[in-house]
Image 1 (cartoon, helix red, strand yellow):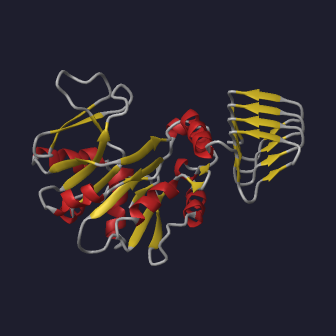
Image 2 (cartoon, helix red, strand yellow):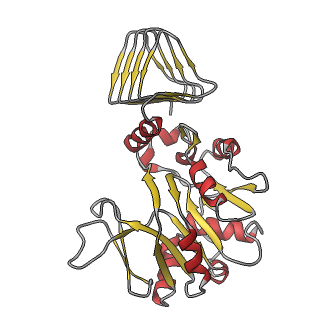
Image 3 (cartoon, helix red, strand yellow):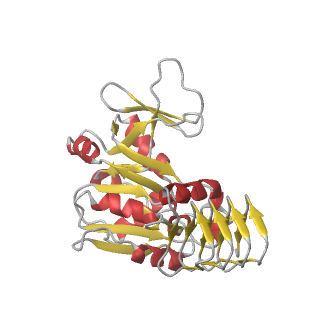
Length: 310
């Protein structure tokens, strides 16, 4: 299951135009990274929950190619925002998560390419109710820290901050395996994963973790989104199939996403133009995001800004 129902408060105003997991990136919407990752687990069904701008989120899911024709992708729209664990419980009660075996759960708002083999192997040992994928920490002062004991049980989940003496801080990238028993205990109400899944499992010494390898990048704020899009462009700019860029325009390390328009003599550098946004003739846009049906006027200069129609 991919969790994609949230409001995305830190991503505003971009998330007023599109849900955070639906934001366009080179290669498709952000949620595609998690869908393709879970497709590698051998699951026969992927479930995505939606709530905020649900129709737009569902459209993004339909755009994703998982690489597996035998894999069903099902979307469940929540009538009210149920929280991360409440969304799991609703999918369970709708019969979308099967009747036996564990469920692999991923956040839908990150760029990630992880080797989940060690995670699945650890959970298959049957010693955990919940098993977390973990990475060597990238920045303990920015993100919360997870600690493991010598048996691979989570001994602490600490807020962001300097590690304590002797601590080996680990990062939770948003992927876990939940046992059927733990899944069945989630109440059918609005609730969150840490309180109803992690805390009870940790008290019972059944919250495990394993370090996996691979790439992970948070996409939580407009700045992080722009930087991610630029990084995915690599050494060239990227233009979506339905975008239009005049041959006389100049693109430098930029992404012109679905519905984007860039007119003649415009210069776009280290920026994202998408979702119906347009840049007028002779305008200059640098280190900025223009998202939604909004126009940069001809000859205008935009630098370090976020412009939306939200």
